[in-house]
Image 1 (cartoon, helix red, strand yellow):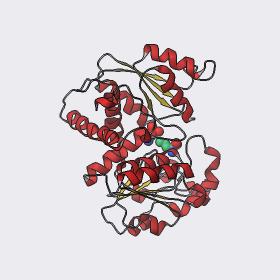
Image 2 (cartoon, helix red, strand yellow):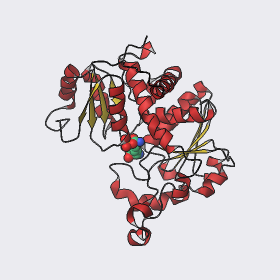
Image 3 (spheres, helix red, strand yellow):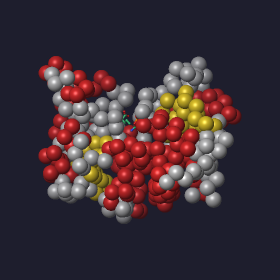
Image 4 (cartoon, protein in one colour):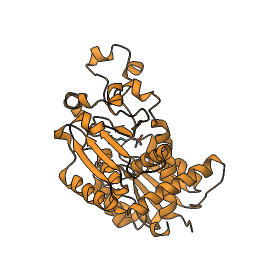
Length: 332
Ligand code: CP
Ligand code: NVA
């Protein structure tokens, strides 16, 4: 773990398989300690900046609670609170924050911004989601897989839906890195970008994993251990609802798809927030009134025995804690 000290956490591919898995193993240990009331204040006296250009429930709360459990002080800085790239350059902001804080979390739009923060701040920077990658999510997802199946290698991990978003990119590359049989099942127009597929294929060659990109649902989900989906419209794409509903309806996770896996022990994962329960929130006539169908997952699957989405949400905290402890704390 000491090889991780002082490093930033921006993308899965910045780490070796062993390093990436070591975050998950450390998270398992920290989760067990937390449940047993054992303190682990590896960041005693440190100050952590939490920068958010986009809203967040899980990531913000996970970083905040993890900081406090580790003995650090978290400072939330929302999009209108500081001059990040508006009246002050990212470079100058990074230099200032680096003089005051010991670590920086960033959630925002362009991935370039989190890279610039890491380059100029001089302290570890952790990516809390950009338009391209969501690597702390991948750690929580893989911890949930490990808790359910005991291992990661060879797991048939199927992501269905928008194959070009941050979560899809991260799971594809992360899955290939750790040796999963990772599949993206989406319409061709939403297949992941070629350079990301190539990268995943190269990683899979080294790890013994497998990469499949397909638009065929039956082929994609056959024998799956994990069915994963994300929203059809990500933050910043709110004008795309109609287009995405038309494209992605055949990729909705419903009981029919769960049955198609042929595996009664298949688990369902979703990074959340999910669009599954429009009736409860907006009334039974929501579909007629606004033409909104159930989207990426039906309420039936979301609440079924297959669904591990709230374990997964909790695991955001344990894994984010592991990332901060390993890169900023003195563990050895
Ligand atoms: N999964 C996830 O990142 O959730 P938030 O957007 O609520 O942080
Ligand atoms: N793809 C989603 C993930 C949210 C956690 C988004 O970027 O909005």
